[in-house]
Length: 301
Image (cartoon, rainbow, N blue to C red; front, side, top):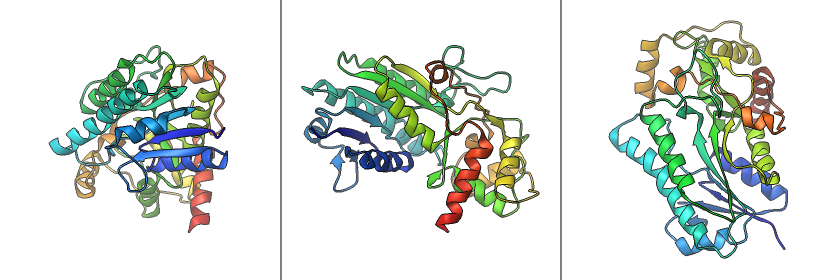
């Protein structure tokens, strides 16, 4: 019998990486999206059929937060996460043989701005504001479903790094054009995870049938923004870079159509549960991760 997994919102950076990895491993991969030729979000029957007998469902759906927080965009960010999660849970309830595991994206931004201590699953404090409210609602909808035949795991993901997407391009461009200094005060913590480890964590949870609940998906060695930019300059062979003051970032964010929260919020998140359960990160230090990414980018040029 052919193995099958389902990727909801699988057309983005992480979804495409997972599709390649599981296709290469002999899986049939169904993608639920709004793109033609794939399972449509508007076709509940097709979603149920895709989920029938699947080993795993991974939900990555959601409008990018790399935008201005207008009322329209905020509504789309919120609804694109909660409504898709609701639709998937409803479809699973209609399956005769539901997926064995449902992994749902969440966000490490759910924790408060932290410069005093790291946030773990057991000791972390949730923050306030729009991004936090989205994370809370996302998880509330997900865990509202009681699915006796399907394990559920919510991944509070830090910033995902990889050559083919994520946040790497703007940081690379800043260093390339001489703006590779600290952003703001540079003391804000930068929690990150390499795309390859995200894939390995998902497989780890698939294999470990005793695990469920909330997991921080973040490398065990976060850095300050100042350290991040120093690592970036080193990886790209640049000795110096000009810093960017907060007002400069706010002006640039307006021009680029994004928000400074993505750079200035201090995300200090540790993967307590994963490490306790025996998961070992392949990219546990930023210098190794950035070196791999920069080498891959050079090969693609």
